[in-house]
Length: 220
Image (cartoon, rainbow, N blue to C red; front, side):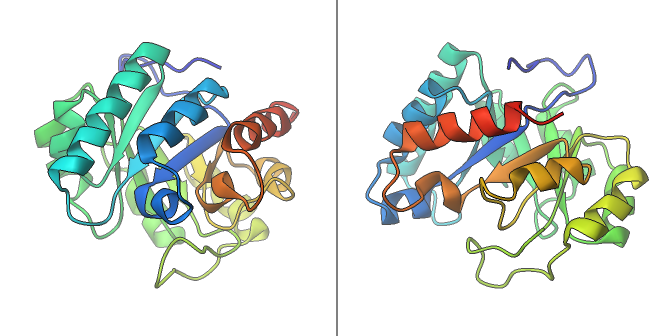
């Protein structure tokens, strides 16, 4: 599935939204650039780069290489947290509740770059819907292993109830696996974000991504 890199039209998200967390990749013994290459080769149509630690020159160099891979594959790169890096690499930006407010981020990115915004409950979803963003994320749906202090679980029923509150594309995140992903789509999510399950024990990264793409392409 291709994805528009221009902001001149409403955003259409691919159902599979992989998030490459550098700490998780390194912990699993995978170089982030190699991981990105495998994810893209396996058919991902969007890729978020998430680095929560100090932005060293080495990390910056990795991001530069990953941005080049995404450009070559015509895949939208999303940078987590950093509006300056999104602008530098002509990438999208994903913001959390504790990051720069979307309206302030727009002053850095300009009007053309895509921005996503994380929400965790009804109040945040309603507030996010009036922000200058292209898509919203909601979670954790089932809990998460990628955060030290996660928010309360949303669950499928709450996802189903909250979905009508926004017309923007909605990404579900948190504890989503290949076993429960279709139930999340059926509950109203347009896309599912995957972090930990990219590096499922014993699985080859390329085959894992191909499996995700295959499963989500079967959703109605």
